Image (cartoon, rainbow, N blue to C red; front, side, top):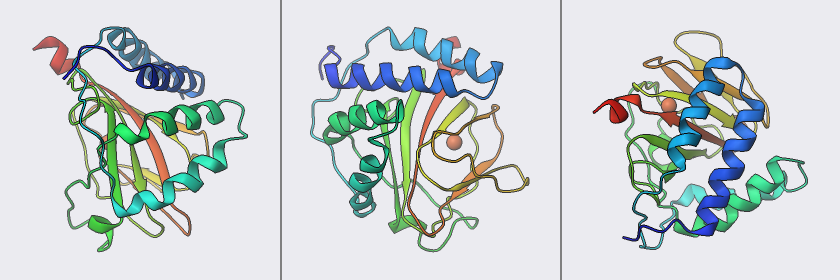
Length: 202
Ligand SMILES: [Fe+2]
């Protein structure tokens, strides 16, 4: 472990928070992102072990390529690419709401947060990658969350209708709300930023 944040991770955090803030859907999300940005100014220990990939990561290169000409998502994709070798991609647990192919057809990775390159519990910033035709399980968590969607794909909160934010779209999950996502004919890539005020209060 080292207490120095790599320039690649710092750049990723800077670009991510800038794009998220610009595209945040409302004041609740913007307030959450301000708290996250303030906390991110403090560096926590960084894991030095190399990252690891999952089979679904074969889709990642083309997905990041497709963002390269985008005015603000292009720099984000470039920063993502630079930090990606350090990411520890992992599948998450499943439940009966997920598609049968879910366990082998997705992975999550954390830039900063539990299991992240930078290990901490107050802020969680990471990504989910789904192969085509995968339904992510309904899940919820106490920290509020702002998504930045980087591909096609559909999302749902509670039992509402599925919606498509589109590339560069953003939406906000209130604490504890149930939510899910699913891919269609193309893979889904989505970035999320969570503010865990329980860790701060603890
Ligand atoms: Fe979530």
